[in-house]
Image (cartoon, rainbow, N blue to C red; front, top):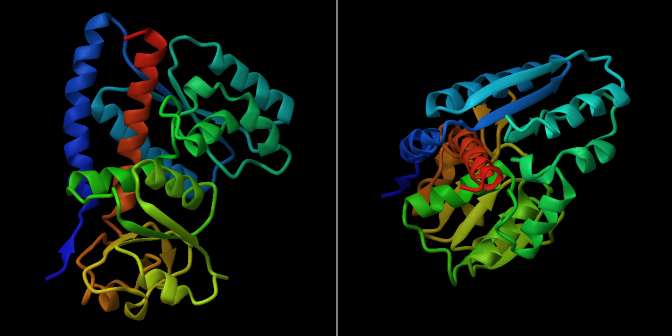
Length: 284
């Protein structure tokens, strides 16, 4: 029988540990603090922020939103970022993307302080992930995948892992993180020849291509672990992942649902990174 890997269970366990850790850290007289920078008013960003603020607050992390006008100039945006970089009371910064068209992400990403960049925007942190340096902060979504595998005791070392998706947000950094844990990793994408054949070799299959229900049972080996990172809406407006859950769950050994899977863990990973940033900056 297929086992459901509940992201909510993972998040609850991680949250419990973080609450205890933050309570102890507050004995120093300081508290971890996160600032979320948002230019404009995108509904999807507002929804993410609401969840992140609640999760951080529940854990004991001070969290506030720097809400900026849609028409803010790049120079004004960089001035705000400089202020946050230099504010010793703020330990983590996350910048909601996409930014308004007048602001260049290629400029901004070099300006966010690497030690406060808790979602891997600055190329310094990207480089650390790619080189296996654990001092930086990986993107929260790939780290959420690792947290799920670890929570359920799924061995990574020596396993054949196939990642479908090559974005810098999920696919590529996740491949490097799996390599660091001694998996044998293949990175595929929607243009891979014989994608089904490549996927079928996986003992751990991670779908992060952003295409609704693209992974079907003919792409899966019996008993494989399936991690679905996708967040899509089908033709009927129903939320679904990159995996055809009903089809695949008949032969998968273990599988994450959508919703209730990887996405449920991401905001808790963000909180974990803020706590780690706090400890680094405060020398704890």
